[in-house]
Amino acid sequence: MTKGWAWAYACRMDLALRRWAWLALALACAPGARAGEAPAALYRLPYPEGQAYTITQAPGGFVTTHATQASRHAVDFAMPEATPVLAARSGTVIAAEWRNEAGARGPDDWYQANLVRVRHADGTIATYAHLQHYGVAVEEGEFVAAGRLLGYAGSTGRSSGPHLHFAVTRVEASAGGAAEVSVPVMFWGGDPPAAYAPRAGLALTARDVPPGAPPSAAAAPAPVARAEAERPVPPPEVLAAGFARLAVVCLLLLLGMFWYARIPRG
Image (spheres, rainbow, N blue to C red):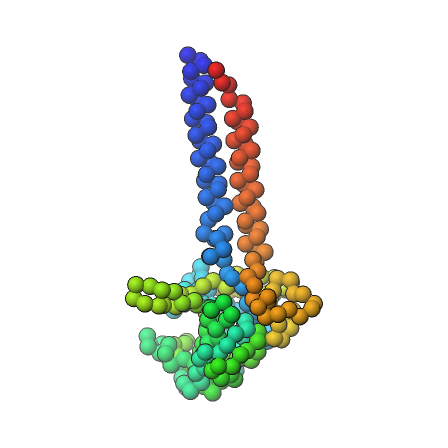
């Protein structure tokens, strides 16, 4: 009787440990750690060196205008009119609108915003919106390096005040045809310089990114080719989370082996 009870108990413990191990493995492979969900590149802050501006809207916080699939991961920086807006990543200008004069709060006023759109080497597109009237400094078809002046902040289009709307999108196929879908971004800057996920209320200082140089987690002193510079660089937070989850999985597996070795067998 005692031996049968011990065997049944051992079987239940073995099943429970297996379930915990699978749960830990699932957590380690959670969407936040997947390569497809992590930002593919670091972006320099889209304003001049030494300046800092507060993020007013960002993913995960209270948002009032970023409700579409193309703006879900957009970031708004509060900045005064005429603040220089710089390219956060190198690419080719595919749109440059400068003729709109005013802003308002109507649902259709977004289309009256002055903006610059830049296509990157990996096909993603960055949008810099609400620029000043006559406040665009580039032309369609022009290649711009990271740190290049694109224009000046304003309040054109659907806007309640001067700010920069920054969003990165990629084109995805859907049932109704192709559509632009927003992707998350990570910024390189702050003090000390590091990779930061944008969040509302955060003010980051642009620093330690030479004009025209692509951002990276460890800038090499020697120049690198543009294709190499665009290679995905996992942010430190993503690497740390991955190692922590792997450590949990290993610990649970060791505990499972320990308990399994102690189970009496008849």
